[in-house]
Image 1 (cartoon, rainbow, N blue to C red):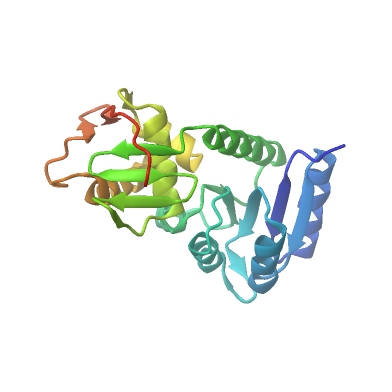
Image 2 (image 1 turned 90 degrees about the vertical axis):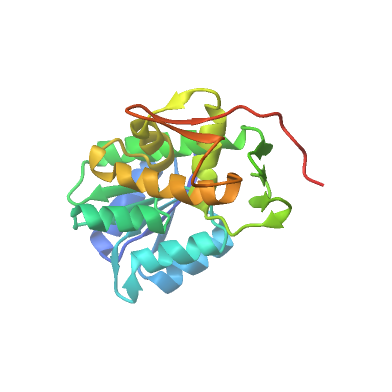
Amino acid sequence: MKPKGRILVVEDDPAMRAGLCDNLEFEGYLALAAGDIRTGLSLATTQHPDLILLDLMLPDGSGLSLCKQLRTNGFDGPIIMLTARAEEMDRVIGLETGADDYVVKPFSLRELLARIHAHLRRAQANAAAPDEVLIGVATVDFARHLLLREGQPQETSAREFALLRCLVAHRGRTVSRDLLLAEVWGHSEDLITRAVDNFIVRLRRKIEPDPASPRYLLTIHGSGYKLIEQPAQRLT
């Protein structure tokens, strides 16, 4: 039987790592295991997992640094951080580094499996969305992970592309911060809505003629954000 997905578990605790892998395989996933950053990076590069479970504290460094390196290397699959730290700032830093979700230990296995399923389902839905769109003065090619502002390539993170793709899917409609958190980050807590606001500011610098006076990515006060509909335009 074909596995439901390939999941890389980067966790330094041998018992927890083995337990997670056993439960993932019982659920029909193919589990890959790493106990440190070096092995995790190697497996992520060679085995191309669909999703990564990543411990925050690893023996050879921080999971945040591995997360950032994975995104820099082009990994665009979901990353769920596993950590015993629950402070708001830690969560915001993790999400802004490129993580999609944040699960605090000890956690419910049922909840973790539900989040894994939701992230993989969302990733599959995003893969079916339009690949090329015109947004303001930017042309975006999601398939090639390329954003051009007036013809000039812009450095754009995987999270920014995910946020853009979500806004494109809902273009012409107001999207609440909670919905953006749920669809892009896998969260719905008000505590980290400022993460959305920070990314909106970054996107406006790339797509708006005048980021200080946005015309295409609008703030709907008290409700959220709206991306103005525009016709698709293919890249040359």
